[in-house]
Each structure stands twice: as C-alpha cells, then as structure tokens.
Image (cartoon, rainbow, N blue to C red; front, side):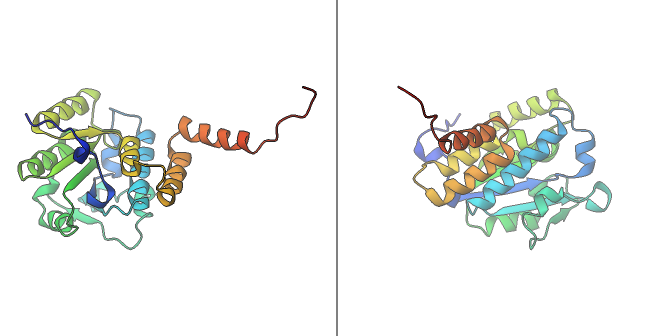
Length: 217
C-alpha cells in the first residue's frame, strides 16, 4: 500500500482539477445516504471554492435529456462552459472528459458525483490505475443508501484514493491565511455554505464592530 503523506500529498490549487459528475435530478431522487439538500449545498460550495481558487472544473452529465440537467446552482457558476453529456456510466471511458481533464495539465484529480457507488467509484478506480492522484469529495457525493456510499468509499480507499470533505478541500487549497486575496473568497463560501462556521464568522465580525459598553471600572 502506498501511503499518502508529506507536504507534497496535500492539495494545491495550481495542481488540482475538479470533475463534477451527474449532479442531476434523476440521481437526486434516490439519494438516501445524505439529506439531498445538504448534498446540493456541498456540491455548490465545492464548485464555488474551485472557482475562487482558479481550479479548472469539468461538468459532466449522463443522458441529460432523460435524467435532467445539472443543478443550476452549479451550472450558473460556469455560464460559458459546456456540460459534457455522456452515454458511458463510467465517466473515465468518455474520451471528451478525459481529454478535457488532461488538457489542464493538472495531476491532482478531484471527483464528486452522484452516485458514489457507481458514477464516482468507476472513474476513480480507473483513473487511479492510470496513475492519477485522485481525491473523492465524500459529502458532495452520495449513494442510494448509506451502505452503498460507505462500501464504495472503502472500495476506493483500497484502490488508493484519498477521501475528503468539501470544507477540507477548500482549506487545503487556502493553506495560509496570508493569501489574502483567496482568503476573502474562501470566507464568502463559508458564509454561504458552511452553516455554523459561517454564522460564527458573522457573529465574530459583529462583535469586533460593536463598541465596548461604557461604564465605571
């Protein structure tokens, strides 16, 4: 087993490419491993983070004329980008997708999609076998059951994949709060999508801007 450790194993925005797979209505209707609203939120947050850090993002659907188009929360972030629609269930067998990813020159492949056990597992396992460094964003993905999702995760780990959540991915891209330009964008994503963490930040800003009460010491 190859261990993923050391500084070079952490995600870097300049080396990352994100592939978002089949975030479509049909898949969402039988999503049972997560609350569907949460997955939409997390997938949108991941896409926003990628855009903020300049990470190329490939959007792909399967049989969109029957399964529905990708959620507008995601496609609206990339208005000029063509969604690659496939017939292959396994995204990595579609040459248009693979060529789009390869054209970025990046080797840290990040994948999120519906369903974990099918549309995420197959391309992940194939890409790993072809030498890609693959990270799966587990909370921006989901399966038809909790068991299906968790078994797929274990299968991909055994194949050599790295597992992370969207917030961990964004934090790893940020890495240093001295990256001020990106930090502001990261904070905006937190405010919109990180629930308690975003609210806590708003509260902190409120307190910092509230004058201390005047009174006798």
